[in-house]
Each structure stands twice: as C-alpha cells, then as structure tokens.
Length: 424
Image 1: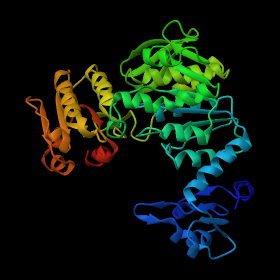
Image 2 (image 1 turned 30 degrees about the vertical axis):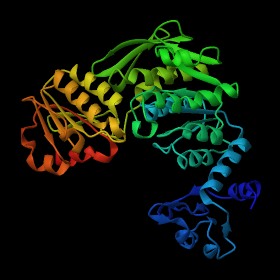
Image 3 (image 1 turned 90 degrees about the vertical axis):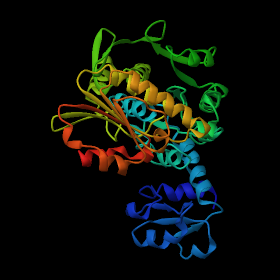
Image 4 (image 1 turned 120 degrees about the vertical axis):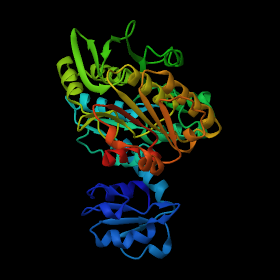
C-alpha cells in the first residue's frame, strides 16, 4: 500500500499504537519487532481489543480485511510519520544534546503552551521509533511541535532529522555520553552536530547558547538566535542556585523549582525560544516557576527528616560531575549515593575513577558508590564506601542512621537507584 493511501486510513483512526496493552478503540496498530518479540503475533489480539487496522510484515499474519501487509513495519511507520509531518506543515522545533534534553524539552513546552497549542515528545521517546510516534501524535490543531532526538552513534541524528524535517533546532551541549557508540567526545560533537548540518543545509533557524564557545563557533554565519549572559540576542542573568536556580531577564526575576547551576542553561533555552515566538515575559516567568521536575530528574523529595535530590533517570561523566559540584555547595549533612554510568566503553574505568576522586574531594560528608564499575575504582577515604551491587548495598547499609540528611541519588537508568525510595 502506498504511504498516501495508508495516511488516508490513518486520519480515520484514533491514534497509532505499538503495544497491545495500550490499545484504544480505532487505533492503528503497528506490529514492530524486537530482539525478544514479534509484533506480528499480536496483530489479531490488537484487532480484538478494538484496533481499526493492524500493520504487519509477515504474510501468515495478513488474515483479515483489517490487516495491512507491508514490506517492513518499522520503515512504514517512519515513512508515514514523515508524510504526516509534510501534510500538517506544522513548525517543528528539534533538540538534542548529551545532557538536559528532556528537561529542556519540558520547559520549552510549558513556555510555548502559554500561547500556542503544542505537541511535544512524551517522556524520552526520542529514538527511531519515538520520533515517528511523536510526529504522528500531532494534529491539525498543533501549532508548534517539539521533538526530542536522542542518539548513541553517528548518523542517527541525521536520520531523525530527515524524518522530522525540523524548522528550528537546539543542541543542549556536547558531553561525555554514549562514548561506547560515538567513540570519543569528538565523536559526540560530530554526531550531535548532524542537526546543525541539516538545519544549515535547509536554511533553517538554530537556537544557540552564546555561553558555549563550541556552539558559537559551529553556528557562525548561520541563521541563528542566541541567548546568554552578554552579547546575545537575548541576555539572561544567572542569580543563584542554592538550592533552586534563580535568573533574571527583561527586568524580572524567575525563581524555578530546578536545582543545580547546570539547569540554568535549560531555563535560558526555554526563555529564549519563548521570546523568539513572542510569548510575553510574564507568561514565560509563570510557566517556568510553575514547572515541577518529575520522572526521577532533579526531583526534590522529603522523606521523614531527610531531603532527597533524586536524579536517577540517567548519568554520564558530564552530568555526574555537574550534579556533584552543585551538591558539594549545598548546606547540611550530605550523603551522595552514586550508581554506575553505562555506555562508556573503554573509557569506563578512567571515567568512574575520575568521578570517585571528584566526589571524595568535595564537601560531602559521606559517599556511597554502587555498581561493578565503581567497585573496581581505587577508593581510599574514610568517608567513602563501595558496593558491587544494589543488593549488597541494601543489605549492608544502616538506613536507620539517615536522619536530618540531604541525599543525592544519581546513576544510570540501568542502576534503577530510585528503588532507594522504597527502602527509605
């Protein structure tokens, strides 16, 4: 079936779904495949649950007038999303980067939604499946689309840009993330900059953090809108981050609910993009001040007499360093519980040792390292202890002594350190 004809059927459906557990009446089900599952086997179940159509790519599952056989379900999903994007002609803002993508996306969304009907990436559905699903969730009512793009190897951002065809783009930063796939920080810069390559070649607009010399250099002589402390299209002043980030622009101060000076860049981007799209200053201020972080990202949680900074959604050397340096400046009796950082490849040993050394050097009363990588680090300090796994830590540590403490909990997604909330 041609994509145009499939799109006409799609427009008659409620939405797109790839998981039969979440099927709603009149959905279009795409039978995706993974390493451990074959969505084709669920096509009949999807129809029984109310799906209007099921897209399959294996002949034996093309069993009714409601199944549509294609060559490749994933490729069809991606082509349909790109066709839908062209059909709507909605302005698209794309963003990528090593750290802060999802928080920045959420901030941009709450700011722009003060004036426009927006559709943004849900959670971090930012890969070769998530980006198409985000595009297909947009409707004629969507006035601005906000698409987060993640990548762990070269050519991935280029691929996603060719699907989403963004009109505007922003790269949060270049950091030590996914080194296993990118090979080096230089590889990260090259991979993330594929967004710049797309925007420049298509004469689109780039939002640039003027405080980042690499970003400034890479976007010179381009169509760009800059933000920073000075000499930018919009100047935003940093005030403090003790514990929450405060800043000022257009003669008004914003007090956010985000901790850490590293979140200042994320807030600046939202202010700048809101300003570019003519959201008034008061609305920008209200949106940012009312935004509360969630999903284990920079969350402040009170548990009994303890204050917990939960930042356990993900971690890499750059974000871990920023979180620790901010934590070291906090007041009170502080304990850092740090989990392994994943996808670092051959750099894992060195990067974990560097973070261990940094943590010990800071004004932090006690440090707990959890995971096989940290366990292999050389740690010689009375205020630090290491555990090979979460289970060993859970069994050995005396949680009853945690009274009137401030805790930082940070680690990669696979460590699932948010489990500590149940223990506490």
